[in-house]
Image: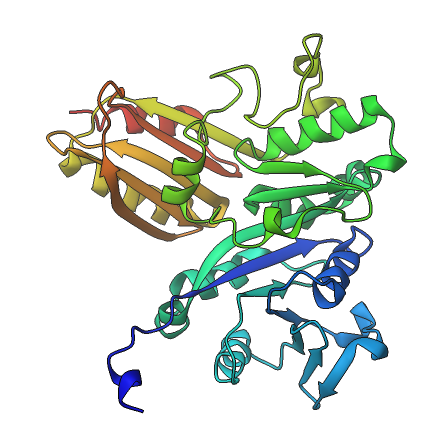
Length: 348
């Protein structure tokens, strides 16, 4: 077929990483993707078929590894290695619109995200679109008390689906939401019952891609100190969100540190961020920032997962935009004072 020779390589497939405890509503969400008539072809990678209990009436054909559904989606299990599983899917005839990877309830999403963030072969064909955490509004306070993983899942997420909101009072919901915000001020929060979130809100969001997230929402990196509260609260005029602190519920050991400064000297900033991610990397879950570099007309966007860091020029500063540098770090045992002092010392 001569036309194939000059056709472009297919655009990278968006990958969504879905985390959340057993009982948070992951199975309900996955079953919706595999059964609803949404007109898209999704490939869902799960740990165990048994967990999601696929409805036999929906299966068109299956081999041992892959179930094909009558709505065009497929479901397969992680066999040994995630990269091999993804590569196997990519070789299947017919393109998918997106891939969704479910992590087990206890798993730390970081290694899964790092796979798509780092592996060159996988990265040439896919792009990490968003890490989505499903949270059970009723049981979150309990989960946070007895597990570090629940906190990590929220800290790591780009999108948090706060599910089972019908099981808590308005005040409990406000507290749970404040806790999520305290752990991760930058995540988009969707409040749902029975995982009833529009699939477009969790799939193909471009939320992991910081440049795209910033274009969609210029206040993406703003934190509570900047303007009242996170940017997607639906607050009425008499909102009293500020009165809810995470400490009302339990000690949040994950903290977010928001740094801001003016234009940076690249000869100071780049060595600083390299060194910071080397020293604090194990404790840094996510890092996101826009940096104004001296004599550079473009905004420089930087983000990291643990010790893995990447940065790129995003776009030119717009007329009237303040050339300021902002960095948000989410992690544990971070020395905020030291980070603030050394970050500011990189100014030109």
